[in-house]
Length: 162
Image (cartoon, rainbow, N blue to C red; front, side):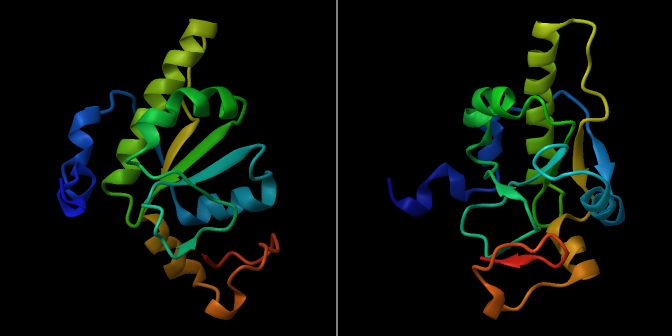
């Protein structure tokens, strides 16, 4: 099989994992930016960028977990991140990969939580960033390429160059 023929390169790559069942919430750029000032990223919330790993910039403090590999990583992620209150997923525009990944994660989180305590739920924990990183950059801009590689200063909200 040629590399360009690999299923990951087709728009229907996600069909093998199926449609997510769980629902999620929408969070705006303004709402997310307020979380950066009122809560601690990595402890209270995590931003998960599900674009491919060849991306060139990210929202400050986000982690990159490509949607194509997310379903295989879910068992480890749920146990590793299960104590975090909010999970915010995004892709470029949050119209495809972001919502699907959020749904898959919400399905796995629901299953995990129900196995621990059937009375618990995950409502209000999984979000999709409205408009994705495109909306974030529209609001906050992007750092210059000269700032590439510098650690995030926990103040600047512009996207970070990789």
